[in-house]
Amino acid sequence: MVHYLLAFHSSCSLEPRNRNAFRHRLSLRYEEKLPGVDIFVCTADPTIEPPIMVINTVLSVMAFNYPSENLSVYLSDDGGSELTFYALIEASHFAKFWIPFCKKIKVESRSPMACLSNPPTAALNSQEWSHIKLFQFTVSRYYTRKWSNELKLQPSWEGFLKKCRLSTKDFQNGLPLLLSDHQTILQILIDSRDPHAVDIEGCKLPTLVYLAREKNQQHHHNFKAGALNALIRVSSEISNGQIILTVDCDMYSNDSESIRDALCFFMDEEKGHEIAYVQYPQMFRNISTHDIYSNSLCVIYNVELRGMDGSGGPLYIGTGCFHRRETLMGRKYSKGNPLRIDTSVRKLCEGSVEELENKSKALASCTYEENTEWGNEMGLKYNCAVEDVLTGLSIKCRGWKSVYLNPERPGFLGVAPSTLGEALIQHERWAEGHLQILLSKYNTFLYGHRKIS
Ligand SMILES: O=c1ccn([C@@H]2O[C@H](COP(=O)(O)OP(=O)(O)O[C@H]3O[C@H](CO)[C@@H](O)[C@H](O)[C@H]3O)[C@@H](O)[C@H]2O)c(=O)[nH]1
Ligand SMILES: [Mn+2]
Image (cartoon, rainbow, N blue to C red; front, top):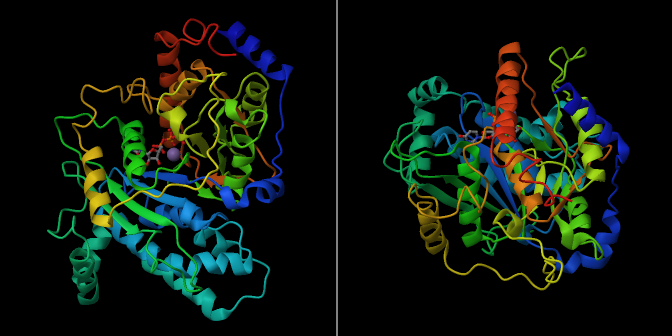
């Protein structure tokens, strides 16, 4: 084992790579023909991942500097939580103010919570500032079941929840707060095709969709991989962006230009057709001075992934990663038939919001994947504790390369485990997952031999 680790680390030092994106050139060449980008945010439990954190991440990615008609944001809620849903409704209203505000003041990063804790230097209008504070305060009250029960006792909140229920087809029967057995709940909260979906400056808003896929005791839900696969199918019906960004709900966007930076690699005329995904490192905003649990993972992000980039590309590590839709769907690399980003005008998905919702609900049912290749040759792989790593390796076995992008300003910032217990659980899961891969047919030496360049 020690020899293997030594060999791996030495090989990583052979050709480490640092990448730079020339985002202005992308804009000069392709501004009018940028591809559709679908962003998937995953959450699973409103008590561990409070709605306030989730919607701050959602707002940060809605505010990317990218044409809104080409941007769609999907929140997958495996907790099926009413609280998260209502918080998202609040966010959909707040976005009308937040997106133009970020552009006007040039806010970086575009998570309202991060903006409050690190205010921009521009002269701030006190009314706008109070608006952001009030929004954070309102949503911070959507916290746990206990909180919401207390809130429901107040007449004003009862009225508010009732209003939300009435405006929400799937929640209208007053379902319990945490659901492990329910039908698909799907709602398009903002449809960017709608001429009325505009912000306070009259500019278009990105599409925003809430999805809690169907869950029941008879069918395994396959954790995050299952959630992402449902999102791939649902989004193909609603917006069908050629590029997919996956982020965990605790990891907000810290640089509004990240989509454009990633596109510089996908749209590179010489090498772009070989690239399946562009991976950012996981950086954390809560690293303590002495980092006693070694959460910053310096060796992985400064040595290993940079080194792997020099020889074919880094692993997929689950969050902060831009993929081509087709490679996630299982497409093989073909030199003779290169897959280029289609820069011709994007075809919009057709149908009313109700039609799109009904068609896509069926794609998120428990039975949809029966007797299909989903979880195997299509989408994210199942039955592995590190489904992201295994999926990335299999994409590379199909002939693709990947890119590691680690700019000076972190593209995404997340939350690292803050207690010994949490850190141990995370490392145990990672260790188990990597060992599982080593002992499986996907063992990198056997399965990957001659396949990974
Ligand atoms: O049934 C589930 C379980 C988890 N998640 C989401 O998956 C993400 C990651 O789960 P978490 O419990 O935070 O695991 P971590 O160990 O912190 O995740 C790291 O390790 C995972 C496995 O390699 C990667 O998928 C993640 O991107 C990476 O941040 C979170 O957004 C969860 O909400 C779901 O959507 N459904
Ligand atoms: Mn996490």
